[in-house]
Length: 373
Ligand code: BGC
Image 1 (cartoon, rainbow, N blue to C red):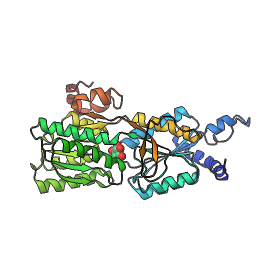
Image 2 (cartoon, helix red, strand yellow):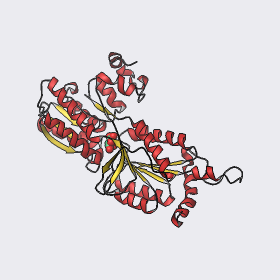
Image 3 (tube, rainbow, N blue to C red):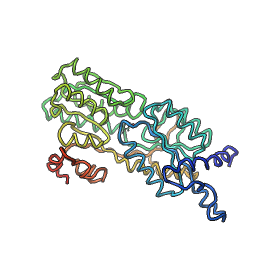
Image 4 (cartoon, helix red, strand yellow):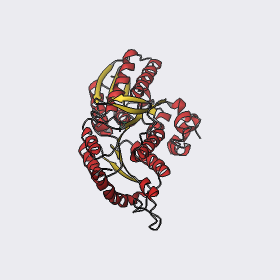
């Protein structure tokens, strides 16, 4: 153990106390327990874990990723502590949050970067302090994370593009045209969603009138962009909308609705299987979303975090992804396209949502129609 590492362990006691509000560990669990009996095995098992997520406008982070990660961490390591930070789409804020965790001396950092390139500075600092880093969901570029856990993100784009092209064909508009709303240009995932969807749309001969990269994945900015396109192209000027996720799709649908467009006639894509999107899909306001089993992703990350915090190399990586600097050992999970036809067999069957969560008020009839009860 290096000198720097010893300092980190001492500082970690503070982190343990600071994390009490999360209810994960008793303050002082980092120290030998058992009435001074010197139970060093228990002491060395108590690790400090930092989870840094990028934003709150997309519901998955606070509703799925964080609680699922925390539950698995508690199960695997009841004495471990979790420090959770959300950057609210602000890359500078994320740097400050990460620096604070590094100063505290956490044992492992799980980082979903706002800006994949800018966050290389975080990885460099963490690694210099001996803290392993997991690239969570979004790839950390030009740096040396220990592991990357995500979905096959190009495949997410392919599923969106193929489903939209297919629907346009069924609607009698095989060539579109469509308006295309991509994700944040600082998110490597957005680049992959764009790559997969553009290839699928091109192969099907769908015409893209205009493409927009939504800063920070902001639903509001997607809505404003769509407002402008409706004014420019006219209400009948496009036959579908590609939106990279449910937040931006929701923004586009809101813009169309307020312009008086019948959104059930304009297929719009999404991603994340957000509750509001699943409800929109059931009533025909959104055409599809992409379900990603976040439970598997968050649990794989918690397992790997415990391994890395204990100095063990996680054995779960099945491939590598080059991030511009190294081939990062990676776990890439499989996304699934969801339309009205398979809501029941995907998100409901998987326990992502219960029927009661989806089938509220206005959605009850659509639920019955889709066989969800
Ligand atoms: C994630 C998506 C999410 C988006 C916006 C992407 O990196 O993979 O699930 O909708 O970021 O936060």
